[in-house]
Length: 244
Image (cartoon, rainbow, N blue to C red; front, side, top):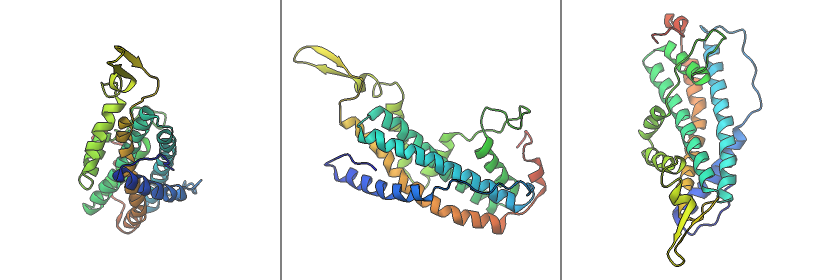
């Protein structure tokens, strides 16, 4: 839970909503689910299994980041909180983007694409998979942020300012870890930022947790949509073809 004191009414409301969502998000976590080895990729059960795997993996990532983010905020570790806050924002945007893509592909009846987006979330990246050097394109986080900004316009601006603190630019280095003193004509350096104002940007990432909480609740609707609408198609067999 975030426990820092602040006199700003806006941040008090953000913290209140964050802490409420944190309790819910931690309650969603499960330790395990059955392995589905017998269902081929041409069956809807396999698609649902992949969806459940992706969703619960993201839940684990979000709960890990959130709990560590709380600790950094409470210790007033501005830089650490900003780093974790940006990672949290990007993770929540990625999760939100998943639902947008799946719903769109189902609407277009592009069932192979549903499988492919799930495979990207499970295996996408610069690493190879299945031991043969094959790769799946990763989804760029900027695409996810743009997707989420269609319904939550504030996301792009928060991400922009968090990046200013996370990157070793002025706000993340000289203006955060040093302070000019006119009286004794010295510049003092710190291992921990001293300006309370710098913490406010890191706190803005807390706005996103209620969004994730709502998206998680919607995941059951997307799952049901897959179960009702997904059908086997020829392009499912071409899942890992290079031109896809």
